[in-house]
Image 1 (tube, rainbow, N blue to C red):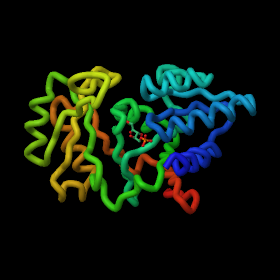
Image 2: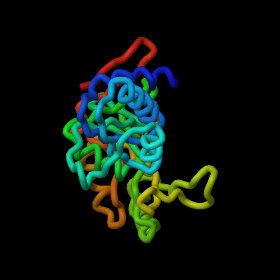
Image 3: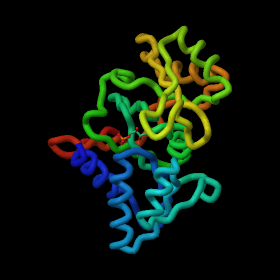
Image 4: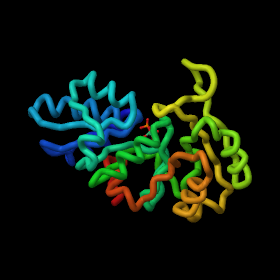
Length: 228
Ligand code: 5RP
């Protein structure tokens, strides 16, 4: 699996140019990309700036000698590179496995171009095949949000498996609710996204619509495939 992620990450490197400001998504595939990027920057003496989407990426970038900045300074990054939990044939994504979806969506949607890097196990015919939709939710509203979502599917607050008791707290101080919608609702993702966002207390959804994604680079056993 590592090798497939590496193949996608290596391909994504080809789109990075000297002087670029890059949105840095979160997760293990982007971590591989950032380490490769750091090597390239050192070897070729490039000027590249990363806008991190999580504390994890911020620390990773700094530890690897990459320059970081914020959206305050660069509200329109040249390119964002991010991972995903599921990808359908229309480049629609589910993201948020690492609980970073809110900042990821802000950075990814602000960038001039968005490239997603995944291994082939992430490809599905229809979203929510294997992964629920993560939602970032204000802790004050968790119960009312769950009650509303329970009318159109099943929803649970995400708990940390280790390192902390109780719900996961995001980098923004919020909860994550994992939502499995009733099946027919995933037929229209834009409508579903809107429906979920209209619940008071839901701050963002892990549905990333394909219209915002320029390319998906897929690391496969046979090599690299690109959805565009
Ligand atoms: C974090 C994300 C990640 O991009 C997603 O979970 C994929 O991670 P990985 O590359 O480790 O499979 O959305 O919130």
